[in-house]
Image (cartoon, rainbow over all chains, first blue to last red; front, side):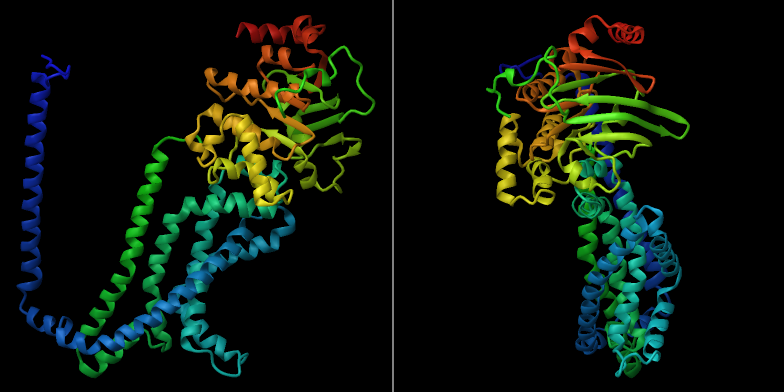
Length: 287
Length: 263
């Protein structure tokens, strides 16, 4: 059963198995194609083939209205982007500080620990929109500033306050997932508590929770649209203004699509990174 | 550590100990809850001496080593390093630890750092060496443990024996006065034990002061000047390696050695 090179011809048993696998995959392809057709028919029946579809199409998906709204909505999106970048940096700093405060040991740090725990409880429970209102109208009300801070600044502060609570909890989970023997090894080398945290614990913690952190970032990317409730002219607010003047909802759809486009790279990056981490962990290591 | 240094620099077991021991443990006590692990351990380790701690699991060998490195606060007693009381809470524990090398059973390499960065971390961030000086010294040691070509690898790409050799190198980068080895071959596959023990043997022959907990009796006999048998929370028997392991005086030592060789 072997040829000149010593390579074995597949046995009858193996040929039979291969034929079976081919039949199976042909069947899977057919089932997949069939279900796609069924899905398309359902969409057509429930959406396109409805009595009001023509009107909905005109009100929500009007290309002319989209073109007209584009400059304003796009300009608003740039505001959202600015807020996002500043808020992301703020969240990383504040979130890390709270996470570290929560993981401090010893009775000396009890007040700090309690404060951090209270903070995360409060801001994870409070709806973002309420935080926005409280910060947006409460902080200027204190009269601390000669001039009322802009809605953009106040909106950014509210986002940082809320998302820091989530990120702090994610980071804390990461810090606690670093095996105690790593701290032990670092301390044995003479590293101080702070250096152990900075050089050994945090880098490993962030790697462990990177997918969760990126997920929070995606979530924040769309929540920056909520600062419009304070009157900041961002993409959502710009769409609202356009809609108010044209009685056409297409600008909202446009703004929504832009937010999706903004989020897609991060979403893909998160998927890619998670897959990479999974692949690495499945090599089987004794870390 | 250079392998060419003659072994005569180290006092043999028959030579009386020099004046002040490098490490002196006086009546160390430590309990975990109701369990008293150390019940008054006293032991002197002379400069350049190698002492093997033997004893059953849970006899306090690891606790003792952790206490010496101030990773475990003791309940009572004194630890003198070079005559200075390091068990005094006013002592800067980080500075003490920086002068003692430790190797753990499970290597405890930092998985997020390359082999080279694992070695140079403490030199740079504890001892304040420049990056280039720390890396030069680290490469020197990696070459000595035969792993220079792995300097850019991450620990999880190395075998257990290689990881433990890296851990040993990491512990001696800044030339600590004392090296503590805690069952460093217990987590290794049998065929990887040899390469690690060969390295320890070289360290011992070049005059490194070593206090090691071990289950490798033949190794202890081969490398250690003296062997301390820990039992019931105290040093039950202490003497030259050949005597404690070959002709133990204490009945508990004899029982323990019989169990080990039977197992």
